[in-house]
Image (cartoon, rainbow, N blue to C red; front, side, top):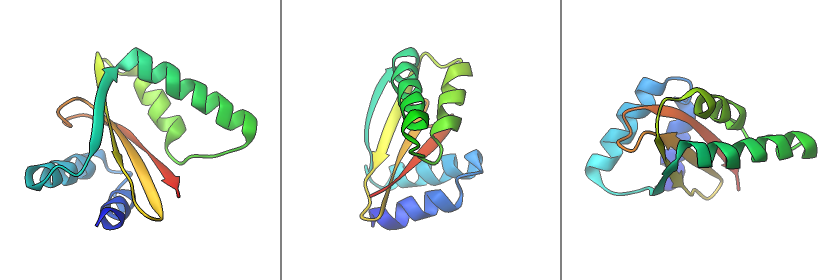
Length: 110
């Protein structure tokens, strides 16, 4: 089930409105996300360091650079980080606490 969800999110990753609608449909049916809320500044510092390290190591995580940029300029005080673990691919979704604002998604190959 999670693989289908991650693949669907990947297919619509460039349209934040579709992602928001899709996520809201999912959470209205069941709680599929592991998530927590942290301050925007704290998450920005962590993921900015990961971006710097990934550039240094030559690793590339799709969406990481875009998420860091969105967090840098976001007016949100707190950010919800939700994680969906699939068999082949997983993703981290960065959003407002209520999922009304989607900052971006990082995809990881497992």
